Length: 77
Image 1 (tube, rainbow, N blue to C red):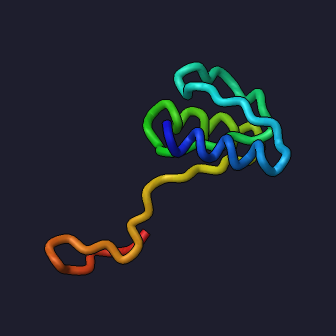
Image 2: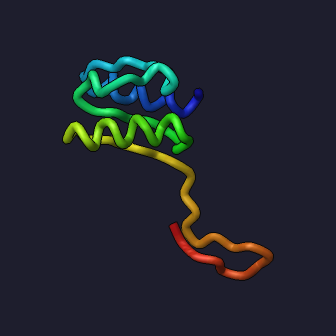
Image 3: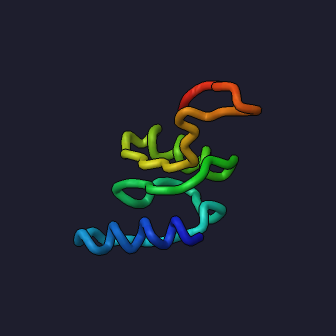
């Protein structure tokens, strides 16, 4: 919730209109763009719905650049 609120505040500060809504209420694309954090099953539906409608999606999730497991490099995001 904290990251979503910060993204909404930043979008609003640059002069764009923002509407925050739970992903579980998604039925079909009804905005110019979808911006969200995370990628669970309900957000996959939002992503697909917007992409299928030819609308942009900004999706943010954890980054794993230079990730190590047990001291060994295991890959990059």
